[in-house]
Image (cartoon, rainbow, N blue to C red; front, side, top):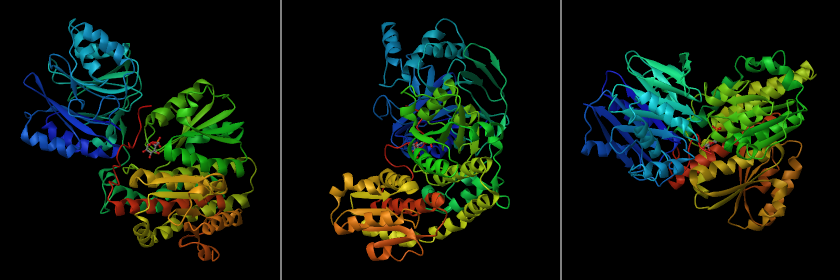
Length: 611
Ligand code: G6P
């Protein structure tokens, strides 16, 4: 979603800002803009489309060299993605520049009032009200910091905000509520950004702003207060990834790189946690809440998109192995339905980014109702990680491809670890624990084996690239895998795909099956293998084109399916970690075959920071 980057220091700011905007491109956006300050004036350039189009515009219309400036990539909410609606937004006098992630919910009321006072608006955005509101408050002699603080007291909604003024051209005023914002602390220079990827090339020292905080940032210093002027002492933290992790490393796309990283990222999720010889698990971030987890009346897993799918697999693991009643909810539904949650419930928030607005709101709702709220998050230091009472980082490293891949398998691995930890605490024997621990330990090598099928899957994609519909079917813990396979295909190749529980096919989707319909079955040799095989027969009887994800020793399936992609066997509930990998590759190669933009699919955002 929208990206923010700002620089103040000794160097020419524009190249740094443009480079930062490019590093944020993965988040998804549809226009971009920059503003710099020079000789007591602000200068703007804004453009619909990609950062490359903004760069082209800057060649034609050069901005003066400056050592303070900011840039924004916008994912449209209010107002179409055109040059005018792109950020930064200014006020009537052109002395204020504002970039903003989030939504100002009461913007219409504020706008009407400001218009009555004579302010003239140029854009259709909610953000522009902030520039005029700050302008209005500065008319009373307030400095920029005070004006931003007072303006935000009138605002309802969410924001990650950066404001510049030509009257105080040596500083930014920034603020956060519900949208991520970090400060990058350098030597004689400082940065602001919505995402560490924008600043990692310049500094790894960061300050995470909390909701309700405002900061003034200049080249040598920063100060932070609450909206009510209470001073806040901030800790400088070190980012634990480097530039190489957010570059493509020879792969054509981030998504492909991230798919191939999975043997390593799954290993990282288990490192120092899985105790194979003792058949146990140690999770430092859960030690203080272990009793709560083990004695939980129920576990509620909450997430969006792929993280929700991970939660669905987690439900099978936690109920079947750890014997705790488990529910899985979409964050967006949970937050608004006044759910019955008590202090005996444990709520697990699943989120790659740790910034998804709905998941964060669900966290707050569950916390307010007294539940123990725990995060299973990838991005270290993200808001969900900080607001949770405990949790586990999945340690997949930065995920840049919009379609989530390695974060999903790492989430599943962490859910398996949590499950095993609870199961052992509830009396699972060491012998049984060891069996599961060994299966987990073997997963990275098995994933590597699945990745060896990439060429076969590419050929398959070529065969099916003309299909406009796909059905994905699976049962048990592989039903969510079917959902995830269908989601991946929709996201990056824009092919309509449905994931369904295989047995439910008879209640509707079977009507779609004819000789043109590709049906992907996830059919490992587990307890319900025979049942799924019957569903395969049903599709075959109607001449559907069957693609099967099946185990290496399954010779039945080759008699029924047109194509079989082999995966090694593992313990049933861990199967999704292997079975999803061919589906990730299939969607990747389908997108390549159809020529779509794999890493930045249309309309999608990596991190959805608005409702
Ligand atoms: C967006 C992304 C998905 C992701 C979902 C949840 O839709 O495009 O890939 O699964 O948000 O994001 P989260 O960061 O909370 O896992």
